[in-house]
Structures are given as structure tokens and as C-alpha cells.
Image (cartoon, rainbow over all chains, first blue to last red; front, side, top):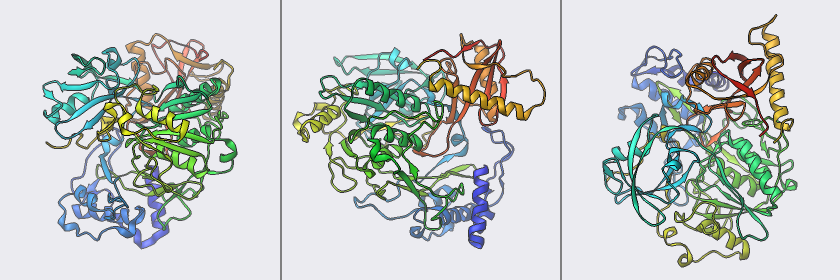
Length: 489
Length: 129
């Protein structure tokens, strides 16, 4: 809340009359009363109108939206809810590939956004599902599991296919039944699953009960068998606080084992703490490249060229972080370093945000970043979420740029695509027939081939399951996913 | 990592910080004193000890987070963050540190220095990793 108040003070002091929209804050068509059920604090809502909520949204967007000059001039009276109005209140521009320029304009119910948990802990079974085909006939498989969880106890492994959840066939069954079973929202929920095993193809029925699962964001660390010179592998799935110590441990391990290259698997890493991305990039690159250089600088709209409009802090570039910041270890430890001049990054559509910052930060200081997999999600942007009338709004407010001033990859980084957003590499589909980190897994194998001779595998040489499929949607942290996970039939 | 390693020294620095905060906030002896305390982990957690931990964290944060059953059993730090972490998150998580002070297990909320003795909880000095 102090952040919000500070922002309001800044708005008023910087823009005088142009910030009159702040007068509309917390004036709600349907005000909440009493205490917020999550925080226990009194809600600030006052009786207002839909027009008040729309006026606040319009002013907030005009003030902070990165592309505020491109906002459409909407007639608020044509919208029946603030949410509908907000959804339309974004740039209509498209990217070079024809995608909407703004793909990250969304909301949460504030009571959902406020919820807290122990780092890496969420209700679930310990399995991350890959939704490979989201329209009937749908296909869902296991992307990966967390050790010592109901999922591993039941024997689930990567590539196992879900045939049925409770009474619904995945292929064409009731999406509400599927969502409820695959993504439990509470603890102690039990659901049954018919699973077709990856190995052997047998079907079996299992039952899973949701629990508070602690995820391990850094897995399968080691030298890839058969590589000479030795290539290390790290599966890094989320930039959460617990990852700090685990990444340090991983780099120390690979150093001790003599890794001379790194295959960094970010295919399922949707981001998180940006400072962890900076630490990881430092631990990968030759320090002669990163010393005194910018990992990422943050650019707000041109109303705020010098200061972060929310915190008021001066906009100073984020350096490559050479010591721990103390997320899950003590602060101030010198970080280990693989001192590499090149890295092989496995990517997918789920490689997003802070993960893309790792790629962009390294590119900015001349590290040869080779990408193997699918285009990344294309999110060089960030937000300061803002609550109003029980809804928390997310609207793009800043862009991250690297040392070279590059940050325009809204179509994602494209393996082998050419140009600044198309580093060398190979387009290779995800391979659910093999374990992550295995030299037989299609993306790892392609990385090793590319490392060996600079060529990509031909489509026919890839495993059967790794071709001719759409890039899977990886569903993480479904606890708060508001969107419909399945496309309508 | 061994005891005496940079990480453990770091926890001891955190303890020093907590002690300094306590000294500033209080004049005279307190029942939750951290004098002679060491970073600790919970051993043999029970429903009662889990409830005590959850209550202490909830009191400090003003809301109830989701904790793992094994919280603070492996390392002396408990990290609390939003259940949904944004892709380019700039805020940092909250941290709680557990210390063993004599026979007591004391939870320290790093942001405020608030100390909460955990009832019905057994803890032991954090072992080398």
C-alpha cells in the first residue's frame, strides 16, 4: 500500500492537474465493505459509479502505460463493466509477425493476488502438465515432476499421457471436470486419473491427493553423459527465491566436474525475480565481459525518463550481480562463475520474462547465446500491479534493455532466426519421449550437435514425438490462473 | 557447505542484525532474548509445532500463507512470497529466521526484527549442509 500512496504522491507532484484521475481511486460501482478477507485490513472502497472506475483506469493508463500515446480513445459509456473497459484499453498495434503488440494486459481478483505462500510451495500433486493440444482432440502430458511428491509416489514420469480425469476424457470431455482435477485449488483434494505410460504404453488408473508441494526450481544438474569436452546441464524452471542457493550449488557442482560448456534448460521457466536472472547471467559469463556492464536497464514511458514512477528511485541500470542478494542464502557472498564465452539455452514458448532477460543480458555483453527449441514468449516488459475496487490490474509499464540497448523482442527470441532477436540455433520441438537432461532428448541432442559442428538436426532425425506438434502450453502455478485453460470445444 | 562457511556466517550476521534490532527496541531483559542463540531448524515437527509456526508467521504478516509441512526443517530460513510471482518481479520476498536460544526456538521476522518464541516446538542448531 505504501507503494501505491507513494505513486499517488508522485503523480500529483509531477503532473498536477493531469492526475485528477486519482480522485476516482477506490470509488466503486459495487464497493466492498469491511475487511479484506486475505489481509484483514479495511478496504478503502467508497460508493461510486462505473464511470468513476473507468475514469480511474483511463487516467492510470495514460500516466503509466508504456505505450500511452497509442491508447485508443474509447467511449466508456459503451462498456458495462470496468473489466471490459480495461481489456479494450491497450494499444491496438501489432508486432512484425502480426501478433498483438500488447499480449500481457490482464487482471486478478485482488484477494487472489494478495495470497502468500512459502517460496515454491503451492497446492498440487507435484506435477507440471503440458497441454499439447488444447482443442479437441486434446492432449495433456507430464512435463516434469517434483521429487518426493504424490506425483512421483504414483510413478508419474515425463511424457506420461493423461487419458481421463475423474469422469472426463481429456480428448473431448467436460473442461470444468478436467480443470478441477488437473489443477486442484485446495489441499486434500483427491482425483482419479487414467494414465498412458510413456514407456510401454500401458494404461493405469491412479489417484492423486493434493498437498502443499515444495517445488525444486533447479534440477538434473550434472555433466551430460558422453560429452567431451564436458558440457554441463542445468534444468532451471522458475526464478523463485529458493533458486538462489540452488543455482550457486549448481554452478559450483559443474565447476568441480570440469564443465567447459553449459546447456541451460529454460524451456519451462516463465520468470520471476529479475535479480536472480542477473545473478545467473553473471555465473555463466566470462567476468571480463560482465564487469562494469549493464545486465538490464529499465525504460518507462517518456513521462518518466529519470525515475521509477512507482518507487521514485532513480533509473540506474542493473549491473550483472556478482554477489548473492540474499534471497535464499546470505547476502554478499561472491558468486561462482563458469567464465563461459558461449552458452546453449533450451527454449520454448514457456521461456518468458526474466528467463528472456538472461538471454538478452548475455547477448548484450557479447556472449554467444545459442538457442535450441521454440521461440520464447516475447515479454521484455514488466508491471507494477495496481488494485482498485477489488481488482488488481496489470498493464505494461516498463521495458528491459540490455547493455547494447536492445529490448525489442516482443515476438520472442527465435532460434536461428537472424537479427538481434534471432541468435544462432535450431528450431526443435519438445520431446516428451525422453527425460529432461538426457542426451537422447531432442533439444539436448540438438544442442550437442550444434555445439559439435554448428548444424541442426533434420526433422526426420528427431524423435517421432518431437515433431509435428504445437508448442505445448506449460501450466505453472495454476492456483491463481484465472483464464480458461482449455479452449472451447 | 560446512558450518563456518560463508552461508552460515551469513546467518550469524542476520542474527547479529536481529540482536541489534532487539537492543534498539527494548530496554532490559526480554523473555524472547536471542543472547547466545544460533541458527536452527525444527526437528520432529508435529501438528502442534506446525500450527505454532503458522500462527507466528500469520501474526507477523497479517495474513495466513501456505506453508509446507516440512517448513524450517531443513534450513533456518523461511521465505514468503506471493503465490503468483510475476515474470519480472522486482520486489523481494519476506524472510523469517529461526534461532535456538537455550531451550527455546525463536522465529525472527527479518523485516521488522519481531521475535516470536514457538511453543510446542523442538529445534536444533542448524547442521552443516
